[in-house]
Length: 94
Image 1 (cartoon, rainbow, N blue to C red):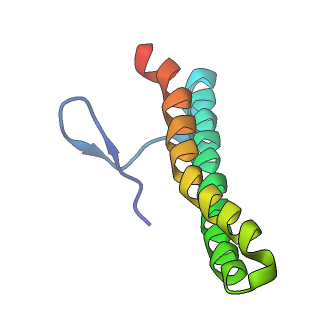
Image 2 (cartoon, rainbow, N blue to C red):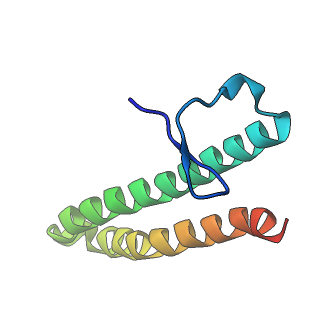
């Protein structure tokens, strides 16, 4: 797999030595990884809640639980977006 990084002048550099990255760059990379994981978790939980909610609504005895699961599945993408925005604010400001 080719390693390509966009340079400031618009050209692409394929020979990047990743060992020379400073700790700040590494910290920013790890923050973006945590942000990505922070979006995946609520999204996965939302999909699971939607499936469980649909299945639970089919049974009369667990209809309330199913409705709660569907509501959670609607809230999860909003929570994911909120987490992403909050995590990106320090990066965008600085």
